[in-house]
Amino acid sequence: MRRRSADLARKIHEAIARRAETAAKSPVWLLVVGAAVGCGARSELWVGEAHGGAGGGITTSDTTTGSTPDTTTNSTSETTTPTPTAVVCTSRVVSGAPLTPLKSDVHLSRPSIAPATEDQKLAVITFARTLVTPGGPQGLRQTLLAPWIAWPAELDIVTDLSDLGGEGFRSAQPMPPEQAGGSLLFYVPTGQFPSDMHFVPGVKPKTYAQPYPKGVSWDAWEPAWPSSLTRGTTGHLAAYGLIKQGVSLLDLAFIDAGSLKVKVTPQVACGGAPLAAATVAVNGGFLIASAVSGSFDACAGPSPASGPANRVELLRYDEETGAISAGALFEEPDPIAHVALAARGDGAYVVWQSDGATALAPPPVRAVLVDGKGNAVGPVFEVTGDGANSDPFAAVTMGNELAVARFDRGATTRVQVDLFDGVGAPIGTAGFELGAAQPFEPSFAMQASLDGSHAVVAWSDIAGAGPATVHVARVSCAEP
Image (cartoon, rainbow, N blue to C red; front, top):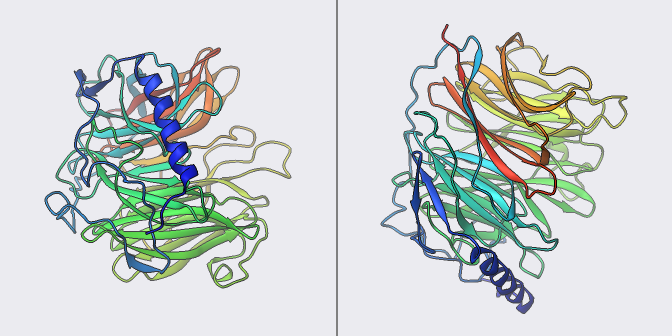
């Protein structure tokens, strides 16, 4: 294991000191099923207490890290999530008005939502915490919500989770599944080359780890940024971007739940700009949708393609063998800016948009239904028309239909959730007015209920001088 530099230790201690000054100004609470529950400064972690300051040492493609799994809480190596019959979603209604944490003196942004329990009755919401003063540390905060029962009146103050990780992170359903919580993927600067990608199998709610939760780390690059994290049957698949010699690359890492062994598959996508990417679990593996220049075959080896990443390529990762096969490829005139995946049966909806670098107005957001191998099984259709969207978006499946959340920047700015069937016919829409607020670090997170009858959506916005805050709302299928 590499020893971290003295500079990193100093930075971590400075971050903790700044965080302590902020924390002393306000109490900490956690919303649990609509009720505020007081919490202390520390609670248990699923794996250890806090990262002890040592980086990962993985340099091979298949190795075991120095972390030792806790056999009392990390004994499950295979999980099965219940899959009730999907509802028929014929239209959309707002069923939960936007909630927000109580007033905070820090920016809250870039929310991520994941199922917190195996039955998915609880959701864990993680978001970045940044001091309003420029140069402040970017940590993480987290709260727990029961989104499929009576909608609460407010979302109370959340718990601090980590002093680091807010620069870039992703969350997913935890592994093992016995306790409510979430898994995390984030980048940790080590102060020396290369830095680490860090994975936390599960952090129990009400946990605050300094400087960040213990897990498993491996060499990434300088810098690297998480793109996606998805739980499968026997572990998690992490996708993360990096830049080598001026070429943007996408690497994959599969983390086995039982052993915490990490298997890295490098350079599955490449291009001349940071690569938008998403992952989703399918039967026996994962689908990956990524921006790419050329194709998967052009990215392996010492000279990966470096042209504009103006294509979206579908890849399938076999969970048992780690083998990758290429599926459909969709081309745009300009580089791909945003990509999302929404699971549907043993396939998914793929949603993307180019950056419109050569267009007179932002280009349409497009989507298509693909099977479990990444091959198209329906037509490409437009989610928006020209000029309607240039921000990131999120997507889930409600019933068998595609739901896409985005910002609608018309005469007023609103959050809009649109519903489409498998061939692109619009079914319904619902939305939330932002009033005087504007999107802050625009991004969305969504999670649907197991039967597809509801979906929660989260975003961040800012009004006036701020600080920015996170909102969580719910939409539901109307009665057929």
